[in-house]
Length: 325
Image (cartoon, rainbow, N blue to C red):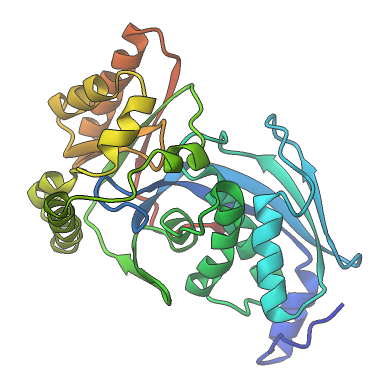
């Protein structure tokens, strides 16, 4: 097994490394876009998430197993975790092999970063087993390749918060420049109606041209949201959670979207919009009590029209992907 790229500072580091052959990793769900920040803003949740087992092997290849109910593709070239991991191994010029078992999984197509969680889990776990040749921020470039395999676009607004935790801003894609954003205590409510919206499909319906007036309004909201997070200004955060470009198009894919959004705002949410490409809807609240009230209001809205749904209430996950065992 090739390991000439690993630098050990002392014998203790080496001893710890040779004993670390297999780990379990938890990778969190994420909310991308955050209303106005299409493809550049995202944040991590405490739950739900992916859990994988990752282990070194001597086969020189990636071997996949699935214990989830979703029938994940196990051909390495079609599996987002394997695609992301292979891109990292290629950068290291490594032939190291891995066994990866998917233990639990965010429902694919739910709009809370299912493919991102898997991609982040794979590169993070392998990076740990290989002695951490990359920082979490550096792992984003590899996890993005898993997103490309899933949706055709190598975006980072889900994988960045999954790896780094908290809120993140993708300032640039060429070159990749990801910036962590501090935030006050804030709680997210996410309701997932039990319908599937594929990211690749939801991207196809987006308009390729945007009127300058709407673009200026959107830029102002992105800047306002980032400023509100930095300065702990909840009112500014709420005023800025407004999307005039993507939400109006994607809302047609989610039954009762505007009624659910209004119910969340009436219940006290700072703001409400589509999570990623949908169909999940997220709201942000100042307190957990309000977030729970918002959850009930949003869930009631879907229940009234007979749409089965799952609801999650979570503080912002500041840690990101982590070793679970």
